[in-house]
Image (cartoon, rainbow over all chains, first blue to last red; front, side, top):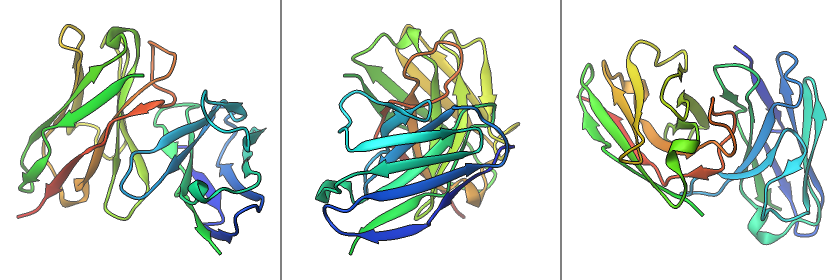
Length: 107
Length: 122
C-alpha cells in the first residue's frame, strides 16, 4: 500500500499569514492527489484534485503543487474560516489512502 | 448540488453485523462511482470501500476485506455497506461520498454525507 505522510502534524498561524502543508507519498503517484479541509463536527470538503486543480467554489487563496512523491498545499492570506484540519489523499492505486492530517490552529 | 444521507449506524456487538445505507439526491446517481470513508473518534480519515457506477467493480481497504461488502441500487439511488464480523476497531463515523467525474472507480470525493456512527462494543 502507498503511505501518505503529512507535515507538520499541526501548525499555528495568524490571520493574513501564508501557510504551506506538505504531503509525501511512499512511491510515485504522479499527480493522483487530492486535498480536503475538515472542520470539527463536519464532513470533509473537497479542495484540490490532480495535485493542483482547484475545485469549483474554492477560494483562489488555496493552491496545490507537486508531482511524483512530494506535494504541497499553500494557503495565502489566511482567513478565520481556514482554521481546520487538512488531509491529502492519493488515488494512484487501490487501496486509496489519506495522510494523517495537519491541524491548522490560530496563533 | 447533490446530497447524501447515511443511515443504519448504531451499537453492535463484536462479531455482529450492521448494514449502512446512503440515499443520494440532486444528481444522477447511476453516473458516478461511490465510496465509503470512515473516521474513528479523534482520528483521521480512512478509505473503506468503493464501487463503480454500474456496481460491477468493487474495491476494499485491507482492514475490511472479507468482512464488508459494498453494493448499490441505482433504481433506488442508494449505496449500501454490509458490515459483518465487526470488531472494536471498526468503531467510527462512516461517511458516504461521491466521485466527482468517473463512473469506473472513485478516486476523489466531491460530495460527502454527514456520516452515521457505528459503535462496536459488548
